[in-house]
Amino acid sequence: MALSASPAPATPDATGARVIDTEEDIPRGRSPQTAGERPDFSPKARATRAAPFGSLAGVSPPPQRPSGRGRQPKPPSEREWDRAAVLEARPAGLHPAMISDGGGLPFAPGALAGAPAPLDPLDPAVAALAAHLAARPKAKPSRLPWRRTVTAPATIPGLEGWRLLARTDDEALFGRGLPPALMTVAVSKDARRGSWAYAAHSAGRPLRATRDGIRASSWRLDPTREPEPGETQLRVLVTEQTFAGGQRATGRVLAPDVYADEHELVLTMFVTPRPGYQPGSRNPETPVRVALAEPLGNRRVIDGALMRFAAPVASTPATANDAKPGAQGAGVPDGTPPAR
Image 1 (tube, rainbow, N blue to C red):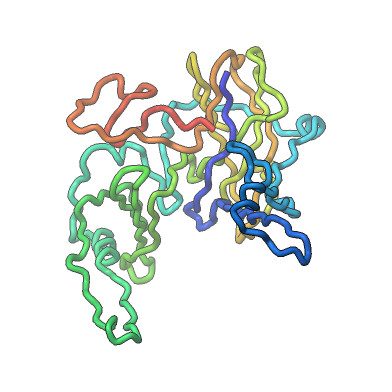
Image 2: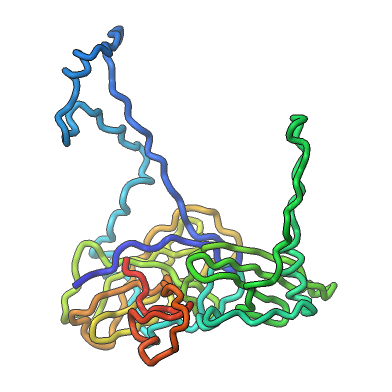
């Protein structure tokens, strides 16, 4: 039975909070030399020092990081698991009703299907989008005489290829392209002036399942034990995808969504964000127990936080198989959220 593993990378949410997404640089090691000794680079000396092919002999190991940031988090103790909250899973469909890249309003996955409908340039929200696309930062003149000539762009990007993904009375989200190269631009209406203006944009961000305005958080199974087929409870470590000041999400993990068929169980976790400003510290994992309606069996457990989309297929009529796992469609979820 394959198990889901590590969480996915994170992204900013619609409220402005940002998901933790760090990459640590590992310093390269140096070969130590004896004090006062001059290195001998002659061919004979190099041949003597050369290690056999396919061997790491003679290569000094990289220095160990003294800090604890690069270490794997310590798994919760059995006492912590006994105190962990028990959440009743809610039945849900294979595909989430709403998704979001954190750059604006959540939208239905079907908004990406088919060819984009033409946008009305007289719409104030569309006009705000066009103004943002036409704007270009002015290049600073160079001090070098042969670089002082600035060439203006040959064309100004228009509205071709852009579509409306979601809209309310005072917000709108437009998109261009399809995942994983989806670009979005959010515009908003000023309540006092009544005018529309650019608010935010994103490009190529992961699309997360969204429920009641909350984007899904990633999770992994307890690494210290493998669930048995007869179990009706899963031990899950949840990593909140928004900043939380480096605090656990104890008491804020909501009842998860679960989809189960004969072969797989897709579990989607949600965490209520902390109010107010939160420092950008790494979020620790929060242990929770998820109660299932029936034994797990031999199902493959999958994290449903992130959506994966099938590659577009031209001139392919929709069939009943499009909603099944692995089916291909133009901009339609392929039914298989990525396994961790």
